[in-house]
Figure: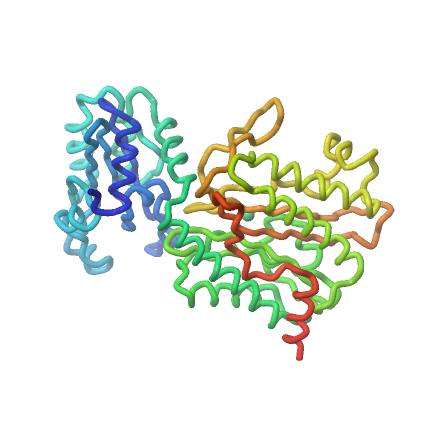
Length: 432
Ligand SMILES: [Mn+2]
């Protein structure tokens, strides 16, 4: 019935927004880096999800109702821009390949405004999803009526939260590429290398496997106490014997993100305090993953991880409390584990979709269901260690990407080793 998955998604959204409503979903525009050099172009995720269209400055219009209708407007190259950017796809091909009901290649924002205006004039509600600033997006901002943009954004977020078989297949492959890259790094890391050399190896692995030019996010390659800076991306330090190396990196494949973190010793051998803290984080992570089942709330995974982290912190003397529950209640673990345990993963690395955040209980109450993909990533970052100095400056995070299925959690990123003994033996092979 549908020409492709994008047409099917547009149809579903059109049914949801209903008769009398028109949704305007602009794609992304380009941005100058300097003079005539542009930043790498990245399509808007909502727009891409509904169109598959990869060119800049386009607009999707969906007329809601029993028989939804979708129209694409895009910027057509003229003779002089063609020389640099190549020929634009024709409207007939856009309809045939992408399954739009109509498509118009336009050369100016004025023409677009007139055309869209003639369609939206009789609609009760006109909703626009985002505030991109390209000429096409700006032309339609003023056409919004009844302020339903937020609803449309929410609806698309809910659709994107549940991945279909095609998306799961891509994300499984993205995690395979990233997981293998993390694994292969273990064979080549040695004291004396620089963080950026490790970053280069990851980029090479991602691109060689067909990953998108921009990775899912800037790679974090943080040795020693750099790991205690959560978003350290300078990646300029030299790896020293006796330190840990934290790598948080994931490729983007066909538009979809992977997000994996591993931590291991630069020398290939754990010292005692490193191993002790690592095992605390690993236990917290594996216990939280075990709970990632249909019907469990996403906030519960965080509770489980925090409890095991708190239990470990108490045991090694980094905090003092009656018991782990008491420590969590008083947020004592937060000093060492200051971020959430999970986020949705999809086209965006921190993907859209409602967490059902409850302000009163300070808990994400969204129940997990089949087809959701989320990360589980507890960590420990010891910036100060009063009374337990041997742990100072250690930063550890372990992060996997988990698919929720009816038969339980599936770790898509399983190729990246995380067992401390396995890491040691693999690294010893690399050092030979
Ligand atoms: Mn993450």
